[in-house]
Image (cartoon, rainbow, N blue to C red):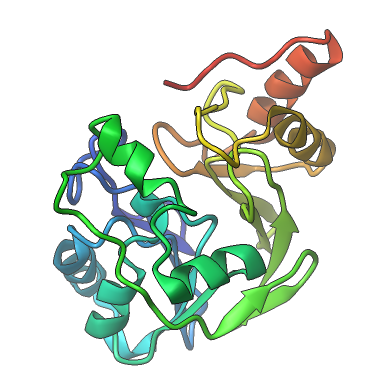
Length: 247
């Protein structure tokens, strides 16, 4: 599904558009011209479908060179190892915290046990350990062809959560992961590393960015005036309240 001349939606589960496996988050493909990048990986259960969607848009799989992970929850990063097997030149990038968990395949650190307990994942599902080529840091710029993508450290939904800011052709894109959703909603979970106060500080950091294209990890997105979702969340915070829940 082409969203803009630079961005495609190639994966999405039941909390989105049902393009791939029901447990998948949104998986975005960024076209940098000479090379391509994916933002998030899904669970891995829809890996072949993600690759088929990339191919269906006419792209060379060898040009997909970067996998940018917003955070390490299984619906976003569990498919990293599978995609690395399917895409010959793919290099995985994650925050230093997330990179450590993924390299070790640490299911407790990513709260996969809690996810199974809550019925989000099947008992037999497991996180496959995966090499990570780059530990991302706040403010770092990742080059994808002729595009520059900036890393924003935005913990709260989980430790090691990052977002990605991209500017092209007069538009500002935000790949928000699970930091923020359509309408200014957030997703808090009863897991060890979900931190409300850190989450609120991360939302405040987005004020004034002037986001046009707002691309969250699940649900609806906006192809214009994306800043309105950030502003809606921050209006709740300004009133000493917590933004409403996404789920």
